[in-house]
Image (tube, rainbow, N blue to C red; front, top):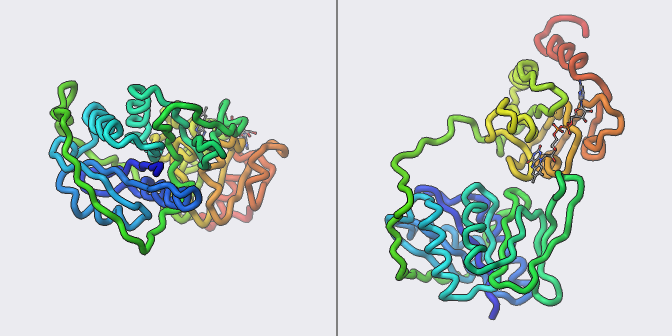
Length: 323
Ligand SMILES: Cc1cc2nc3c(=O)[nH]c(=O)nc-3n(C[C@H](O)[C@H](O)[C@H](O)COP(=O)(O)OP(=O)(O)OC[C@H]3O[C@@H](n4cnc5c(N)ncnc54)[C@H](O)[C@@H]3O)c2cc1C
């Protein structure tokens, strides 16, 4: 039977939620095409995590428990995944498109000379069993349907937040594997790590997003957010320019919001950005271009110059003026 693998990412003993989203999607595909679904988990002392992951739709969880796998290390994880894949010959391997997932997927694709669909926002198989996905491309101006052709395993990284993590009431087998390859890192060692001090905004209820139309002048954006009790996000060009941390970039290569309210200031509405706000309840955009594509993705679209509107809004919210 063909087997779909999902790399279940853990970080120092905590499961990465977006890999469980991918596992749940794999379950759906497994049901549709009669494929077996396996989660693959690496770590140290992972028994509890393995059982937790098993609730998200896998037929089995294949895991390797080794101190060298406690924290993600590109070289060591790639060695482990390649050896396991050679042993089992899965048809397909899916990764969440987290930083580590993207890194690992590329390293696994090379030795197998495999096709890798990067950052898909939908996933399916065609009538010949080829992995097929929708990928925003060419700067986000198109969304292309791409498929892997003949190589196996066929690989994809999946944009976090596009699928829902679901638990299933079904039996899951747990298979511990021992590897032959030496997992001692010989290229680099992680000595210590620090968590990012930046707040995770993926679960924020209210977010004010700054686009290039703000000219990178974020003071008014932060003040508006503060008065609304909201967090701040940015489009990618602002993060690329170093004006805001990458952790608060919204979109297909950043955070996917599921907020109740998003206010988008001066963003054009490129598909790569829009995929990060499509699950929000209420989207209000302000843009001086009446034809900006963000209009189609907004519940309320205000045609105005943000440098005229936002100062008036601030005045109102501060409780002063009659703006
Ligand atoms: C592989 C890949 C992945 C990507 N991933 C992401 C991603 O995750 N997130 C992301 O955001 N982008 C991403 N991008 C980039 C994306 O395609 C767009 O280039 C980007 O979203 C544009 O940002 P923007 O809307 O801020 O800027 P622009 O497209 O330059 O839009 C600026 C907007 O501001 C308006 N404006 C200007 N001045 C004012 C004013 N004074 N008042 C009101 N409105 C004003 C303009 O009318 C315009 O609509 C990615 C691109 C690639 C190739």
